[in-house]
Length: 622
Image (cartoon, rainbow, N blue to C red; front, side, top):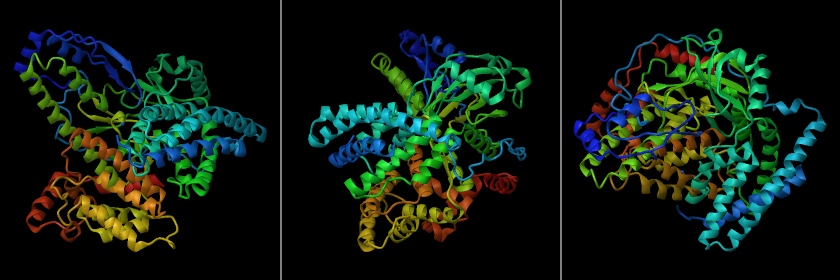
């Protein structure tokens, strides 16, 4: 879509008569090629070929210590195993995110109730002891076989830490090893990829590849899962069901299908995406987390003399929610309720009558995954740059304008999730966002969410305020409040001094700008703060850590779209609207306050149903 409305641009491209068969249009879960798109490009001389489908990022700081940490981790894990057993070649970006907002009544009550967590009891707990022993032994042997080669290479990297080729090989092997180890290790690697405070950039970039395609399970398992979940064969429920998955992720894979009329969703929706959990995920998630954290305990206490970067309970709980697809179904309907009436944001509709812990059915949405849109378009036009310089410049300007607009929409959604709803999509990267053909931004893969405890949500808001305004004392105060590690041996004076250096490096007090008068880079600033916390053996409580990392992912996406986006000053209206901040709390200059407060109150229409909707949401969260 990204409509080529410029006649001069269209004519210039027509004259080129470029044959662009290599332009494979890559799709994502719920994405398909657009007929309208093909027509647009064919009119300007392009031949567009339909592409494949895929599922849902360098420095060397602390290189040897990082390699040592991971090498020790691999060795410890192996030993512990024995011991413990927008354009989518057509997304009409000219019409993407219309400014007009519709007014709706409060949506009906949520059809899918909150899935019970109980005492965080894993499904494997109900199996016989001999089966648990069998599964544990089997996994132990597999993981030893998987990790020992990587451990050997990790030791070599620690010894020959200047060998660039060896390090590149080690990074590639690290990703392959985690992929082969199973879903728990892949998820743990994804979490590590969100901790730039612990590892150098090349490690973070390598680990981020774990979000790409995962191995597919056989179609026979899909048929069996659907029958076990609903007591019916695929043909009884679906008029059409592709036997080839359109995407495969860490937890599940997705098929395209069409429901029979008697199973259609509200509004007559029959075109659906069917998400089916992989066969060994439950067993792996039961055994692997125990082995993983036993190894980390040993590594931290004996080899590194440092604390774990993650809270075991938080990791287990997050993994359990992602393994149980009823949680993703619940999250999607809750997000849809929170954003009901907004034309810019949409979430797929979930079938309330066809959902289980291993199967989920959601509406199919046509469009193009965000992370691919601009890269593909810009790369494809490089080939014609020399022949049509002016046309390419005009196109690049249009792309830039639409990226800036998209960044604003993503930011708006994030701020409402954080400040209005306190219920946040925990993996909001470009691969989970799609520019839909109807002009909205669709959000997927909501298995991982984060929410701050009621008693910590307000203090966290003031922590963000302190970061924005460069208030070192308040930053230190809140970090100590958020810490869940012992502080008896912490030199708080030294900790405060080091934090002051970081804050003043990134923010000029009271200005909400950096020392070079540019937008504050919140991600880098918080990353350095977490490094200092690790140095002083302090650790953020689980909900704060997940929230901070979620914010870092979102900020990274926004800055990719618009490097000059000022997150700090753009956040002010949301704090005024959703947290009732006043002039003193925002530390603004007097000449800016009235203008920005007026913009805040006028620019964020809530509708008369907001209070009732908010109250209803709180009751559904328990």
